Image 1 (cartoon, rainbow, N blue to C red):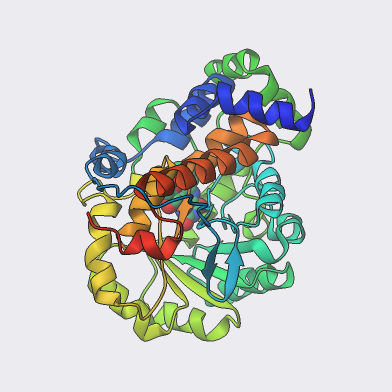
Image 2: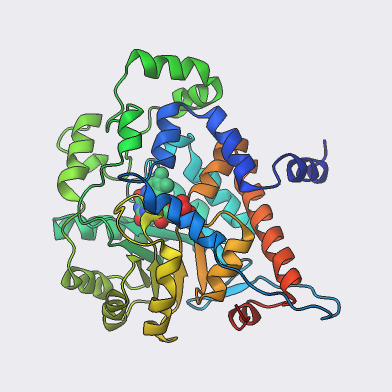
Length: 385
Ligand SMILES: Cc1cc2nc3c(=O)[nH]c(=O)nc-3n(C[C@H](O)[C@H](O)[C@H](O)COP(=O)(O)O)c2cc1C
């Protein structure tokens, strides 16, 4: 089958992200699937994230002649081929071995940003040279300022110039669904896990080849490098230690762009502006942290009003279609990130998966722009609701 035939085949077999999710689920052990899918608490926010998009409606205009929508987007002085990028995902290799590398390679082909998490299973030294100038590094801030500086230096030396500082983890999240599925950090070898390995042979073969997933960026700082001590190290070092002063020090120390990710309140957006960040990430961590807040998309307009064009806004949480991207841009986002959608792609189709996610998203976005009678992202912003 030629590459073009393969693409056409995939478009028909997996026309939507939900098709990729179903395939991904069948290829991943239960514990990996539960880790990817889980929200927190009763998962109200997780569901609201996607449901709220469905309740936003737009009214199309017709007879605009031949339209050829352009979806190129400029953010912090750099132009990307689409207004979306790949969100940071921790423990990525648990969901699909070497997913970080496959995602970074796809980002090159599609000219979109790709974010590496501090708690990913591959290091900035491995992924940075593949991601090149499309790589963003996501920072969970260690308690010890020296360690923070070391990790930032490693990211910089690996070629990263955009730092995404995640601020929405004041405490570890409970993520009950993941616990019910037997997820522990580190993973425990139980009869169930062995059975899961036997019944998901592709995942298992690739995992055995790469080695069991571990937090390769931070494990060297744990006193002992066993999985147990790495897990304990992350719990003890990261999360629950951030203040605006700490963010300011990071802003001052990082010579490249700084994005603060996880903002839900207009006054916190104002703090970001005071710090002089380069972009604000409106996100509720994909519904994984606090079950009591509204969906991220419902909170976006108030932040857009507060920011009032003083700083670009990057939105994530709940995006599953190109139409969702259109709606987020309409409500004031300059750019969006996709978390689970890209992992569904990579777990469903391996190296072809992230490319297919890009094509589904870009195709759906362009189609819906044409349905709405607009051909630029700017026009989406001024559409009537
Ligand atoms: C499995 C998983 C792991 C994640 N790990 C991180 C992480 O390490 N750092 C981070 O800033 N956000 C992390 N996030 C949040 C994502 O970056 C992003 O905010 C979220 O996935 C967006 O929601 P969506 O999955 O509905 O697109 C994670 C999300 C998921 C689903």
